[in-house]
Length: 105
Image (cartoon, rainbow, N blue to C red):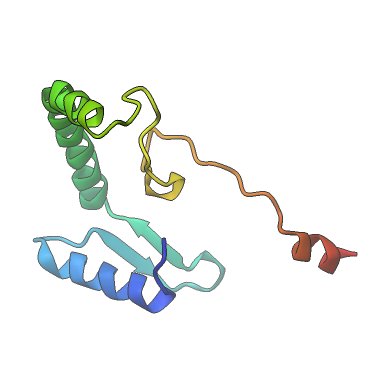
């Protein structure tokens, strides 16, 4: 994502403070520690994705026209990094780096 661990947590704190309920909950309980979306956070993501679908559908012809004007292939996949997909989008698996393979030996 291009963010440091500290930047991610600062962003989470800002997002939690912006809305009436927190989007992310933090659970510091030993092995079960971590962060997860709250039910409110899941609802926010769901609503955002629904708005995104409606907006993309409404603007589809404009996007295609703009892509043609820019000389781009309108049928090429969108340049969205795999980490930016939430929910229904499949995640790509990472191949181990050559360094990781040599460390195991």
